[in-house]
Length: 334
Image 1 (cartoon, rainbow, N blue to C red):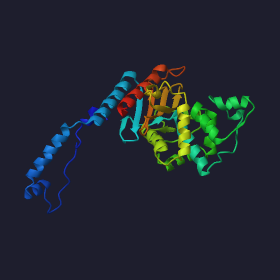
Image 2 (cartoon, helix red, strand yellow):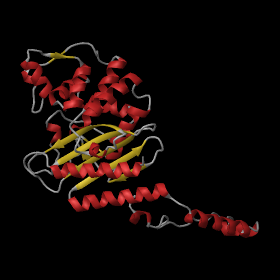
Image 3 (cartoon, one colour):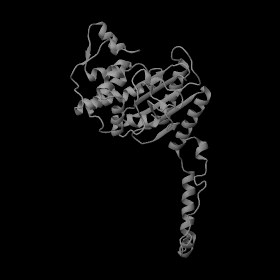
């Protein structure tokens, strides 16, 4: 929370509730029981607490101010939520605002598929057939398989392709196999995520004009969902480790949040991007950092640039997320 927010009166607009007939104001009770020594002691304790070190709060204030300045300096809209799964500390900036997920949803999809296969909701060993008709823009893995004469992959193999390369056709096959976007959203609701929603298939789900709530999440909801994947019994240990390996192996986000990874930490992520006419460019990343000997630190960062910029993903937009990573790592501490 920025310092300006902390400076607001906590009791703004507050008033004592109306007294019932026969009741007395609280200060009369203090007088009747001769509580002045107690009141003085309480005031002394409060003053002592106010002067005590508050390093975690100070660090969060500093980090929040840095995120606000980063957004102001670069323009556009930035949403961030970082969660230290060990201590429960959190850091946010626009953390409850909605952003289009773009391909960051594929991390949740891969986890959902692993769990569905484990629970028997789908057969993780059965071949799933595909053809040229299933191809959509950016389907590198399936396109290569078809070129080599192969037209089947299992659900876990498709999930891996979805996570590592963001293969859109693989994601669509998995969504359909799970029952469609509404069914996927229902599974997320059952897992405790009340915010993230999937409404369409790839690539249409990336077309999100301002104000459109479809295919969106909030930084807080995404980070908390990912935290549950790695710190609860939401996934069995084997699937949790497999998902972690896939995230670490993913190479699409090395210039984003993971650019801030300390040498002795491990990190994995899932990126999301969208460039469409008349819409701000979207450059997103969801990363998990594993400091040695500690619970993970999860960071969800969503950045919409100030305007539409045609062409490829801009390096300056990725640099915004790299700076978010540095702010979050410094906040989390070594």
